[in-house]
Image (cartoon, rainbow, N blue to C red; front, side):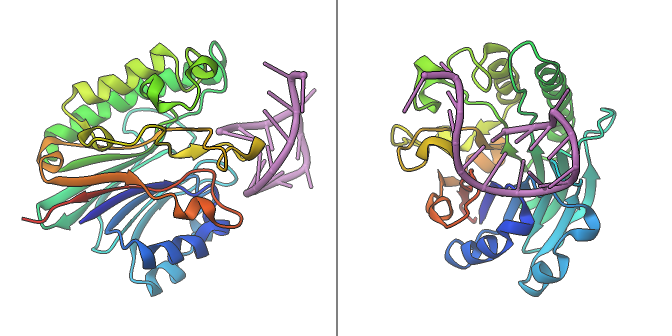
Length: 260
DNA sequence: ATGGTGGGTTACCCA
């Protein structure tokens, strides 16, 4: 079973690339971020024709998250319960898997713009609310994956140039504390389960030929509960879609979970 | 050299 996450930066633009990618990397469940579509504009017909079940928490222009699954989704939850937020950044659903019911919590964490900004304050409040939500979900769902664009590079090694990034947005200690707080609940960063090549990233700025020069950050993550981390056999970004014409600025990240 | 590109929309936007 393959679990994935991908910030598509407009599902309208990226739908053909998404469908193409599924043919070369057949994932079973994927969380999408930045669909930038209202629910009525979601490409349900195209996805259903390709065999996907789906749930979408849409918003015009900004944000928007979705979960696609080869098997039906149930118990869909929109947003973080109890966290009042007009921005559509969280969706969760349960699917059946070889390991039993699997809960996928898809998140598009706030970018935060700059330390000290209102958006940064919102980011830290969002992370605190997410931690409480994940703790509650973990208690209910042994097989939990929290996947998405976290807009956090967890360590200096997750940046192409620590001298540029350390202490700045996406790399500040309060943000990293928020990320580590999720791990402290009992989740494992799938990436960290394996020896990984240096300079492994998931996002590259469109500007300054960032991808060609591998000037990236590792900010997209799949966090796995222990019952999913134990049978996990591989985890890596798939850089192929980042080489497309008109690519997303993010690559998909994929974890393979062994069947039992 | 503190820029640039690329989504979105037509907003001193958001990444």
